[in-house]
Image (tube, rainbow, N blue to C red):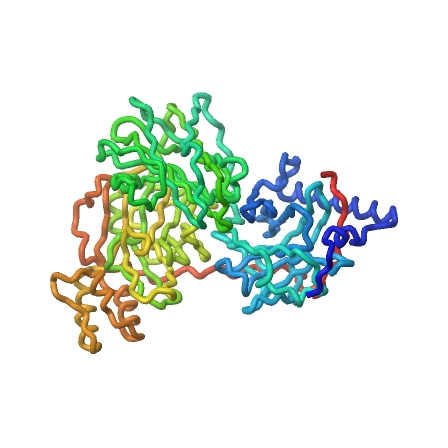
Length: 621
């Protein structure tokens, strides 16, 4: 590493065009590009903002990312704002937010020149030039408070060193260079200020419905709380609807983030409490506090969910989410997740969610249905597993009984697991064949959960099957992780938003308990240390005493793949629909969907494997 005493002089010494014609040509090229960008991405009329999506990458606001998506070109255009004088920056993506084995762009200076390159990091954090340069720098210019970069990259490049940009969560990683480096190869991320941000890059483009004239708003927020100076905080705040609040439809909601806290407010959710609970005491504090009233646990019906980078959520024109009136609880719980890796002290916050609602009810009530696994310890993940899969079913028998002949139409989805969840997918099957994916997140994070609009409405008819699979990683655990409500236990859920609302609120499964007990008895025949199968031993205790080895892991996996299931085909009252739901056979699936093959852009190998010398222009501020 070659250090220079003055960072300001480094940027000041960067070469700039000193021939008027060259400057004119450069300016013209940039202007032409921007015109083409706006036209290609947003239509023939220039929008107010060609980069509609924005997130702060770091809590202090040094780095801010904006982007736009072209599904026609399968390309993302990025604008990275760097505030303050820096010697360079790294920005990229990785599978789980690791800084090792990551795909980067790097802007750096050696003290005399500035360079831009497509790069990658190895297992030791060393940066290397990518032999295939797939990031294209379009503009670099100074701003009043720093630097702005404009660059683009295809979704897929078929370069093994590049990250495949796909639907779902993307883990963005960054690093800030505070001093020059003589070459790219001497940069190691271990010595840099680095960080992680999660976002969905490939946003769904949906038309914005017109708002009714009688639209009203309501802001659900915790007033002026002091954000704790710790990395992760879940804050709970109770409020209630006005007395005699009549039935309305929520037709839209958006986040209201306190100015200056954009880098700390990670995600927010508004829950409605169960109507069966007559009153909920006031509360304003950490969700994991021992002072939190137990009754808050009955506030689980999601009304709104927002995560960093998400824009306003609109319901389809024909449907709205009902709240208020008879049979609807007045009590609401706001939950805010603060991500404060720098442990900033003394910051106050009043962030929340603004609901838009109307008394002019739409044609259909929207509903929310739970798919996946029942919250029960019979579904468990052995310790030290890299990718263990559990699957829950909404069977043809349940949909045949509970859905209308005209079907239901799923337009949004919220995936949910606890801490060990890594992938979640729900697939629709019909006549024994998987037909389409409802929602998939191959890079799922339990720390980034939002309601996502589907790119295509999925219609489900009587007799269809909905299959939800979750992949878990328990490499850092020494005991089995069982299903349940606790944060150290696990869940596998897809909350699907659909219309018209039906009486079916929960369609989930779990392995039959009797077959699980047969598994424990079988394991006792092969293990020197016995698992207690006595009546007083709970399933959690039985899994906790299991001496894990490759044999009992594989047998458990096989058990979950063939044993009968107990179906929970439940109404909103939590009672099952009439029928026999235990010892049900697994749905027979004869044809499964394959994951799509990435489309590689033509001419990708023409880009030379060499850094681009960057001329930093002056912006208009």
